[in-house]
Image (cartoon, rainbow, N blue to C red; front, side, top):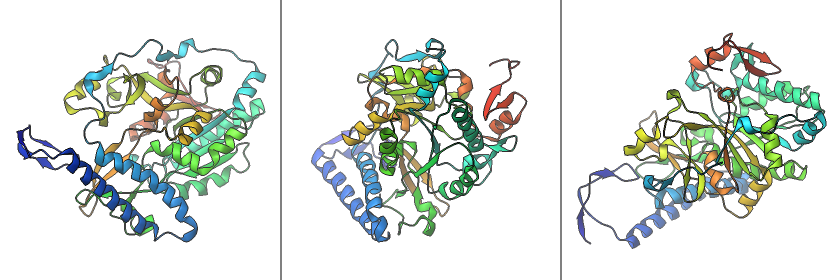
Amino acid sequence: MELHRSPSRVDMFGNLLLDYQESPTMEFKELTNQEAQVTMAQELEKLIDTVPEDHKDEKKREFDGFLQLFGKFVSEPGPSIDWGKIEKLPPHSILSYADLPGHSTKAEIKQMLEQLVVIKLNGALATPIGCSGPTCTIPVRNNLTSLDMTVQQIEHLNSTYGTDVPLVLMNSFLSDEDTMKIIRKYSGFKVRIKTFNQSCFPRINKESLMPIARSCNPDDNVDAWYPPGHGDFYQAFARSGLLDAFVKEGRKFCFISNTDNLGATVDLNILKTCLSGKEEFIMEVTEKTRADVKGGTLIHYQGKLRLLEVAQVPKDQLEDFMSVKKFNVFNTNNLWISMPAIQRIIKKDLLDMEIIVNPLTLEQGTNVYQLVTAIGAAMKCFDNAVGLNVPRSRFLPVKKTSDLLLVMSNLYTLNHGALIMSPKRMFP
């Protein structure tokens, strides 16, 4: 093999590479990658053997998704973006909220709502604000949780317009049990609530690149498992059977948002745009401030509009990425997506999302990787995907104690479950 000089750096596994090293052939790399994938598949088979017989097929389908992620991880090291190839955003790639169609009659609104499903990403725990349990169970205003407020909003829509907009929660193995206990109290409300669980993937030992789990029951070792980010939504939603059922009902669009974003309410003007245009995917973005510099942004790359997350940015370009002038909007994670389009993409196996590699050190000192994807990263797979620049009021997350204090303050009033900002605030 030929010796060559290269700058000191680390490989995708975090190991320091020497300045002088042998350059492995492509054949060697491919064999190593193949070996890692074969060994991983064997380890997953052992885990599946610990699953009750009636759940084995379901777990195999889940692990198929994990193997795809792992295959990308070992075969595509390095940044997924070539910074020099980022193109200027074309005109009309980000729509203005002010230009959306306005007034609709009550009959038109009823017809539009009959084509909508509201989905909340409900996999996270409230540990960042010092609480236990799912984020949706924490009281945020007038002793109401974010889930209480969402149910009130949808019940108001259903009662006002005589519709049956369903609410769907995507839970994780961390949030499912507590959430299922809580939703029983909504049985008397005019809201149809459905749930499904996202996948449960094994954490990978950094040294061996193998799962640290010894059984498929997270209760045996909860640290050995993780929910693989909200990018898992598409496959999990399809596997649940809910996607096909809603399309069969005649529903065309789903409105997806994080359960902790109290500003993410059903907007009839956006819904009207979805149903009257050709866009299969609309991502709500809003103006970036210095508090949002690490938020994902929109770029044009290889002829497609796509989401760029901070984890994909080369270190020497981070300052550029965090510039509020160069990238002046960020992703709120409020998404409006065509459900027939999701069906098509899943059926034709067109789903393609960049991997975000999260290195962690567990309490006992084990270094692990967890491979996740972001739901917005799939926008490049959809036809006519666009951004929509919305008012800041549609992004009101509760991720820190300071956020909680803000939404509890007199800057907001509550109206049918929606927080309304005081007109006396300096920056509405």
